[in-house]
Length: 142
Image (cartoon, rainbow, N blue to C red; front, side, top):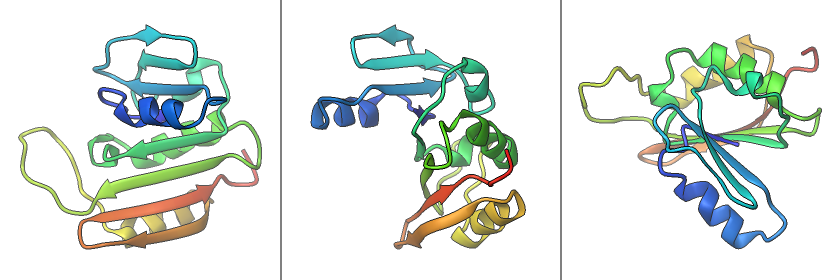
């Protein structure tokens, strides 16, 4: 599931590339739709565990800066991941523009600190001039 999927471009591309993939997207502003392998639902970062489904991967791509609470999102993600092999993928801008919408751009160090505090294990992380990216696995105790 891609949390903060917007128009669903990321999951649409994944479904095109991987014919056996079933992809979900969640966004509080999305138009709900369900197709054979593509599902977009109206839900926020704090709602994914309540969907009653488990996921192999939870991603958020260019949306983390909109989430009201990253620790709450991590708790929801830990509950929604299918098992210990489940992974979280985060990609976001480290800097942005003032859009008038409440948002917070994180440094890689800030997100790494939050993940550590919440018991997550980082598998891979990095940054370029504009973006941060992290792949993490949930806490052993969920």
